Image 1 (tube, rainbow, N blue to C red):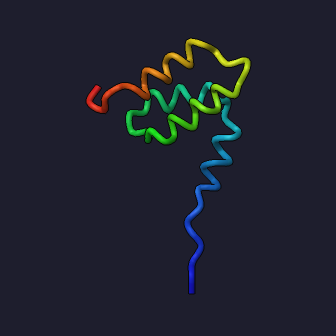
Image 2: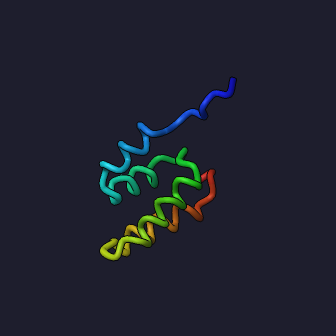
Length: 69
């Protein structure tokens, strides 16, 4: 019998309640954040017309930073 794939619904719901700026800052500080998560945050930031340009630069730098940094 097939089993449903595990869901990260709890994580997704908690991140929706957290402001985008806080999510980005914590993702940038956490060196274990997957690049896929960083790219989703960048997409959300690009969609936000009121986004802080400095935050965008910090996130872009983190996406391009080597893992050893």
